Length: 222
Image (spheres, rainbow, N blue to C red):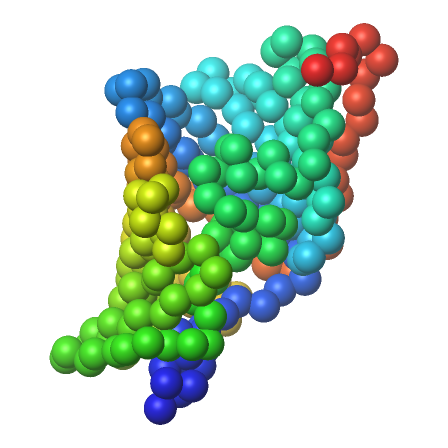
């Protein structure tokens, strides 16, 4: 039965070759600073991720290229270029993410939910299941009418860290025969709190994408 629960949680996992998305981002940190931006994201599954971030005036501030082993960040305002290992993603997202986890977070697939389901409960059209993995205890909530994920609550297995993360997904719609969440709310709390609201304005699957990332000669390594 627990294997069936795991399969149900992953039954709507989105498969694709290419992805294109336009996302409105609202970002709030523990100091009360609010940042609004628009991100354009292109993904070639399991191999390449291209992110362009523009501010309120539509000026591109950052262009980021992510591979499974590296992250390149081009600051187009300061005219700098930084090359980092994929470990840099953990600093940005505040979670133990690699390329695959970041890809699943963007697409809306379940993350940190291994097969060893500890317990589950069904109430009406809602399934709640608890699974424990290497990093987190994950309590996931699923709408059983269409197997869409409604919420993920992640609690660090290391109680000394006291790290929690909540991911809410809503605004589901069919996009090229895929059930896709257009609204995401993410809250990460450890020593400080981070709130991120993602609103997908454009989503396209499986159109071949380009990933332009030419570094100007006058950019300074950072």
